[in-house]
Length: 156
Image (tube, rainbow, N blue to C red):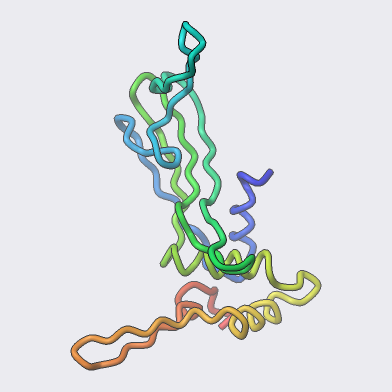
């Protein structure tokens, strides 16, 4: 199922996802709004949202493509949520440097040849989809190659 496809990142050259737990009053969106259900209006003129009293939500990795089929943009981390009368238990799957991590992972997953080895696929990613960011502070240039921060050591 597509909702659980992000779990394949655990078996990839990318560092494992951290798991963060939350238990308390309902406060996390799934993904944008608090957990809710839609009810039909009595006069059949439409529907309206009401807070979910009991239920699960499995939110997949949120992303889109921007300028081309391989220009991935991260939107939100995956989350599993269970609500029960105003309380929520969440499992958040958080990647290091999440924007860079997921955009590089998605390129690796969808745009590289799965017949190649993992190392060959990573080399292809680095060549065709570099993730080097350059910033300037007080006239000093700083270059960050995020592949060095998001890949497991044996793939560097």
